[in-house]
Image 1 (cartoon, protein in one colour):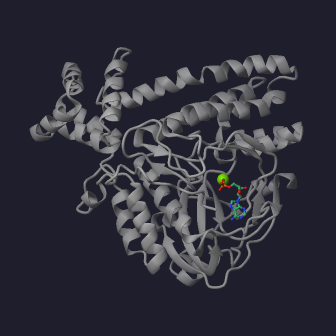
Image 2: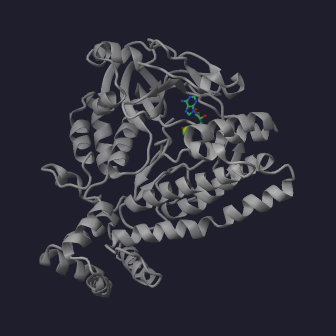
Image 3: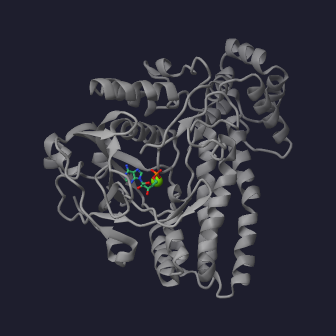
Length: 484
Ligand code: AMP
Ligand code: MG
């Protein structure tokens, strides 16, 4: 593979040079062959599962790779942790794919680093499989996300509440720069490092800003806001709950990263939260926009010295942008929800319709994905239309009236709605069943079958119907755990 590493060109305060700890018996468990094509993995490696297992467990270092553990800090559940960093991950390096896009290749679960604190540096198979499945599903849904190239089992146990099979997951990301990376150097008062980091991030993810003058860092915050708004709006479109929106898990390039305790919302309720450690519901489905704003405010604080030497002036400038977050978010969110409802253009007065539909969903404990899927289908089927009228009552009539006012044909509205409303999502109970099968049998049959369906979430394939069922109890007792 052709590595072209740039992060290791930065000063060593940004990372620790460190090698993965070899594992006893690496075996290729899941392999993303389309991603392998995209990355142009050489044929002699691609077709040799033993070599792949060696390379993507960290046992064998690929030529050109310079493994590092990156340093970062972060707010975890609102509390600042001045030193986090990759405690169980090794960034192997950067490669270009066939489209000229740069990717970080990172192993997770590959052993202890300088940043491991009390941790064992390892990852269990279950969370590795979850990350693989969820990120593939999100990609196919059209949500910006990191990807997975491989899951390799290690042949070693990891000790959590119980003994579990160990694994290393290979994650691909446009980069691993996070809000927490900036926080590390801001907390140290190292303005030079902050500037280096910010210029690096701009060059890598926002190259258009490079030509900007004095306002560059302010515009940077503005652009990051734009991308992170798009990200959260996409989460809200498909019912995704990230579960651990700590600042160290918020990527500067706007990709979904860290699939630890994530889950999909079944029954529509903005207060939905599944993570066992999120006892206050800080990262509940409906709180995600507000939390994203809070996180971006933490980034902006770090950048004050770069925005203006006079702190008060800097606060004035960037404060205005942060305050505008809710308005900007709402514009993008409303437009997206309008499309979910089949509205070619969303008018101010359509908010009433949207809220009454959402209220009805919440009150009647209806499934978010199923409802919007059936609403889409109701345009083409009398039977589904009368079913939906039964469930949504007068909301349905209001919706139909509004749809009929548009110039578009039913066919066109149907097409529009289908682009925004998936027929299938990675439902929690199916993800759990697949993970359990992987853990208990060591077989990937169910995982591969599930992945095939999830890779076409807007199409009804022969097997799709097996995965559309909402959980029998509305996922009331469902709990997720940080994948540590
Ligand atoms: P996360 O909740 O996955 O975002 O992880 C938060 C922090 O804990 C990061 O610094 C991780 O690298 C670290 N961490 C998580 N699990 C482990 C582990 N098993 N061993 C060492 N460090 C870990
Ligand atoms: Mg993390």
